[in-house]
Structure formats: structure tokens, C-alpha cells
Image (cartoon, rainbow, N blue to C red; front, side):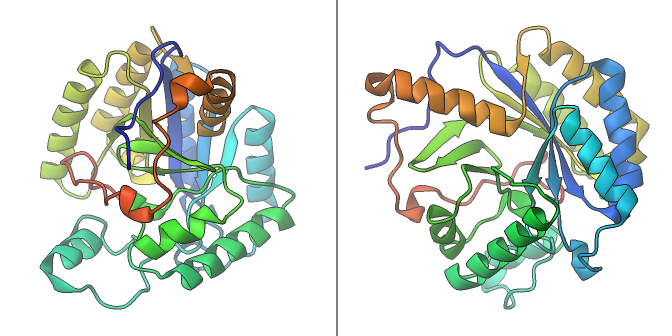
Length: 289
């Protein structure tokens, strides 16, 4: 039986800033966002790296490798963010699946419909790519936060310590869902940007005591109004939250769990992937994951 997700109140609240879709093609826009964050404070970030972005090739330029090495040296985390960041699975089944995979994510939900074996192949390819660079990722984040039932089952036997969905960080061994508040922008139209700005302002104000994830995407850098709100939100969040990478957040939680088994008992989720339904879409969660 699955318990309601919870985070023990005795842990101080955290804020995790992540940068999605990191690849050589997106790096100039990523760097703009990194600079915008640094203008507020030097905080550790989780960089979600795509090895073969849109199948443009998985060769890694020397300059790009050095950039990521520098970020690691500064305390940033490198996590696996899919392998190609593109939905190559069979055509959607029905209008809901079509809306989820083609409209909300613009066809980027790589793991939205993959089976277990196909997912295992992508995860293995991503891990091989990371290890070839001398890196070992602790986290895996699916593009658009979409995971099929088969993908969940593949993660259960993977070496990753965590994954995330739109509304939670999921510890994987054993499975446990930690509720978080996510602030993310959809910038593909003026209406989406307007809704995102309004929605994120509301969600930040209502997030007292809840772990917050501030998720940035390369295209956010194109809009000054988005950057301005990101900087304002981060400044306010840092007043009462500890900045940390997702890997550090998970390590802290695991240490707490080990020291307080009685508190954790009953909060561990069932291993059945059906315990984690697909995330609900919101005006602010329709950006490319």
C-alpha cells in the first residue's frame, strides 16, 4: 500500500536549481542562464546533460567537456537527462496520449512510451557516455518528466539513486516519493509565458516549508521578463532555504532516513510502478523537460 509522500519536517527546507537540456548546441543559452543565476548568488546547480541531443551526435567537443568539468569543480552536479531528448516511440494512442506527448512536450518526451527493455538500452548508452568522460551520474531525469510504466520498472534495477517527476523527487532504492514544489517556465508562446510568470509567482508564495525545485530551460534565456522573475524568485527562496544539488538533497534525505527509521516507516512507496501516476499538467509544467 502506498503512503502519502512526505518530507520529515525536521529537515530544513531546500531549494534545488536545475538546468535542463544541456548539450553543445544549447550551451550558449545555458551559459546565459548560469550567469543570470550567478548574478544573484553562487549556488550549486544540477545540470541535466543529454549525451546525443536530438541525435546530432554523441561526440563531445573538448571545449564542452572542459566547461562541464569546470562546473563540476565548482560544485555542480551532472545528471543524465535521457539520451536523445526526443520521443521516437510508436505513435500516440488516443487523444490524451497525443496531447501529453505532442502538445505539452512538443515531442520531446523520450521515455513517455518506451518499454522496459528499450529504456534499459537508453540508460545503458547514457551511462556508457558519462563513464567515457570520467563521470558517474547519481540521478536520471526523463525529458519532460514523463516515464512509462516500463521506464519505471527499468529504473528499479538501475544504478541511479533518484529520478524526478513534475511534483516530486523519487528515491529509487527503495522507492520513496518526496513531494516538492516545482517552478518551471513554458516559453513557446506569449500566452504560455504570461501564464508561467503568473503561476510561478503564486506557487513560490504558497511554498512555505516545502522543498522547491527551480527548473530552467535554455529557451528561458531568450526572455528578459523570465530571467528577471527567476532572479527575484531565487533571491527570495535563498532567504530561508539551503541551496543544494538534487544529489545532495537525496544524500541528505537518505542520511536522515538511516538515522530515523521510525519516522520513515510507512513512507516508503510500493515498488510497483503504478504507485507513481503520470504528473498532472499545469500551466507552468508544459515546458520541454
